[in-house]
Image (cartoon, rainbow, N blue to C red; front, side):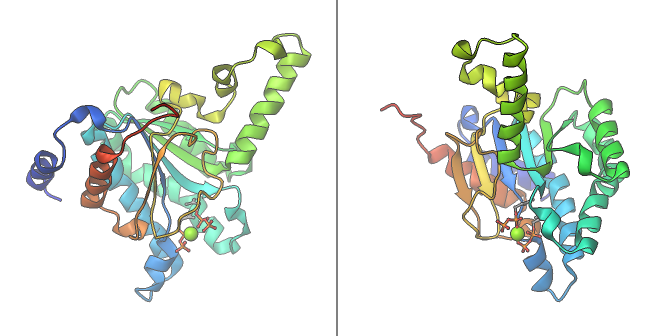
Length: 252
Ligand code: IPE
Ligand code: IPE
Ligand code: MG
């Protein structure tokens, strides 16, 4: 979209800026099918998907989203063929090599959730560097879920809490939900840890082990578009739908 189109869209769609979701989390699905339907290799779908992350990150930041979590690789995605796994693992390298200047210009802060240990050395390094060089940026937080699984996150938090209890640092009777959240990987998002809007592309309507704790009261949006087709206009449409939702959090 051109800048003018983006501005026009903004006027059409958004009258109340206050109902922009703070934390949007995206299950970026459908890269493989997008490629297949064009007679391309799956890897080219992932490449197009990576480019779309750049577009949507800049756009969400402009719209006033505070945190955008993107599901890049799940703990279950290791089951895929090795060449696909390898391709996905080198994508962050390409992503930050090409996108870092724009990240800095947009003042975007990069964070990560997931288990870094199993990642190839180069992937891990590039993520660490991006996190470090953007740590003082004050714009939107772009949070990558890499080798991430909701269950593994909750289990790791439970183990860390159990350790603190065993060492006498925590009283088990007094542990609150907020305390528990501080043990989750998503605590890197601070006050925006819980998801407001969960978007999944490609027509699948499932959660696939994504932010199980944090999605407790999020609104869900399922788009039939494959992730590489989910452009700024599609994102604006999703935001407009969010603005019509009435969140109740169990109240009336
Ligand atoms: C999502 O696209 C990207 C990742 C899971 C890394 P897919 O690769 O799952 O695409 P489909 O679902 O096979 O079309
Ligand atoms: C979820 O998509 C994981 C990511 C987008 C990284 P999948 O394509 O792996 O999920 P399933 O297998 O369809 O549930
Ligand atoms: Mg998929």
